[in-house]
Image (cartoon, rainbow, N blue to C red; front, side, top):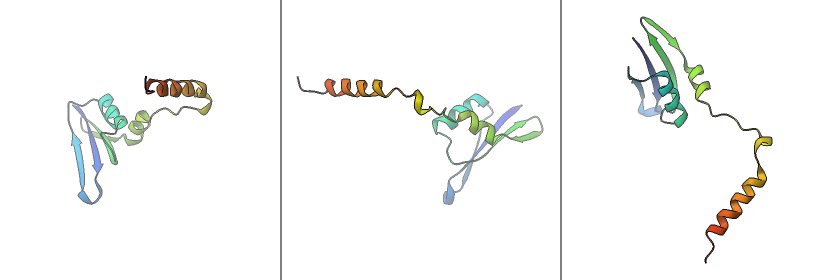
Length: 91
């Protein structure tokens, strides 16, 4: 059996371990990326009788890709903004 333990730190209010044998690695990554799991102390993968700390790997996989400034189309942004302004003009 394999499952994941996500320890969430609430500061003064304590900590909570989220343990659900039905959650897959992909689901854990999805929840971290969406912000559902925040203030993570650690993430452990339990498989058979071994425990592995996979916190860094999961956080790296869940990180949003960085968009380089040269990839941003500023002209398209200005045109979209102008179109949005026209939508809200009185007719």
